[in-house]
Image (cartoon, rainbow, N blue to C red; front, side):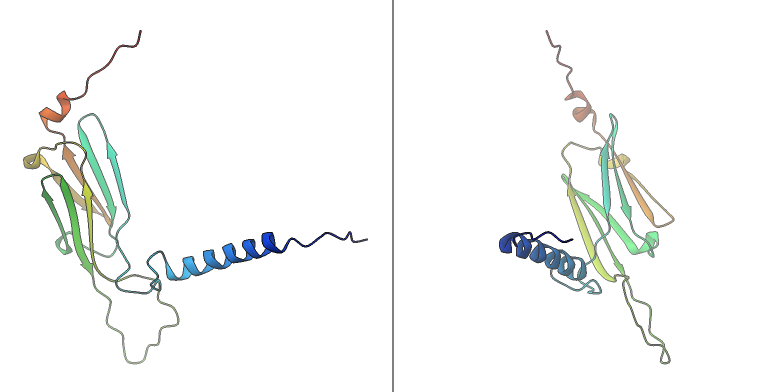
Length: 148
């Protein structure tokens, strides 16, 4: 047997709207562009801090080290590059394109002073790793406070 349950219009419509918004968000992305847009991609980053360094790791699949530029200006670290789309052959027709192409630029404001002369970057299997050693001045700023 079924039990009659009152229909809560507001709750049901709110849930439906949220599900539709989520669906459109997954398709069009945060910027409102379709996922296949050339203007909507940038590499994912991880930034971690150790006692001695700040380490930035970026996913740049399909790019080699010569196609990426890393610069630092003051406290701003910038990673730039361009991923070019492969040329389409005459007898091919795409049914789905999910890989993203185009220029990108990611900038990170550093929260501590780094030694620009000793920054190292490496690229291996689509992962760019940038090691930014902290300056001696920044290392000295860390003061342990005793708790009574």
